[in-house]
Length: 284
Ligand SMILES: Cc1cc2nc3c(=O)[nH]c(=O)nc-3n(C[C@H](O)[C@H](O)[C@H](O)COP(=O)(O)OP(=O)(O)OC[C@H]3O[C@@H](n4cnc5c(N)ncnc54)[C@H](O)[C@@H]3O)c2cc1C
Image (cartoon, rainbow, N blue to C red; front, top):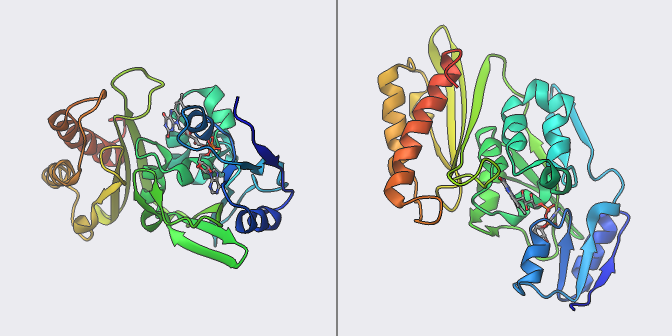
């Protein structure tokens, strides 16, 4: 049996102090990823710092000027069901709603999902498409980083050993923004994504003012396409071109969920479908 010291700080400040003072220490939030790794002996920490007793660390707030702030300890279910998320960020609600199953979504936290940085995850692609940032807190202060910069690779982030991911920040949505998330699984409907496509499009008078498609789970970090269509009419040909580009840019690995060629082909189809769904009602 493995034995740990478990500390239960009551504030982010106290948690950061523990992280900066202890050795062989690991933060635990929902435990859905970490406990599996501990059981397999990947981590054998001497001390676990349970974040779940920190009051207010799961709060979700929204205001139209600053946007959305999600405390890192909010569960994936808290995020998908928050009225502000459903109303202003349906893309994020959609991506959280398809994570695993309700039991996992109730335990797993959004902070744990992003800090763990498993590339076969749903929320990161949606959040990169939404241009979200993460707030990182340590004893020395608070810094923010674009999520796209924070994620370095599969299980790799810029998080320092003594830092906590304290919140997720999403800028206010601009009027007229349309978006969709398509998750494709090849094993069971509750499985991690074989590919996850988050598309966001804002058009005015038929001209595209913003388009961002983040392709998740098919590369070490979400791959983004769409910038080149700004100022253009989003025609079927242009959508096809973007879908082609996405399929070529991704860097899939062959695994139980499919071969490299299969995944590239899948990305081309899903990106086309997601973008079309943003501009034509009833496609996705
Ligand atoms: C059966 C199963 C199916 C799943 N299916 C999906 C799926 O379909 N889609 C999907 O996206 N995900 C899926 N997941 C992954 C799940 O979303 C993650 O395990 C979960 O979000 C991690 O959050 P947690 O709070 O449980 O993290 P924990 O397990 O507590 O921690 C994970 C890691 O993050 C670190 N950490 C946690 N919180 C913080 C913080 N605030 N600051 C700094 N570091 C922190 C921990 O030290 C640890 O290294 C699945 C998981 C399981 C077990």
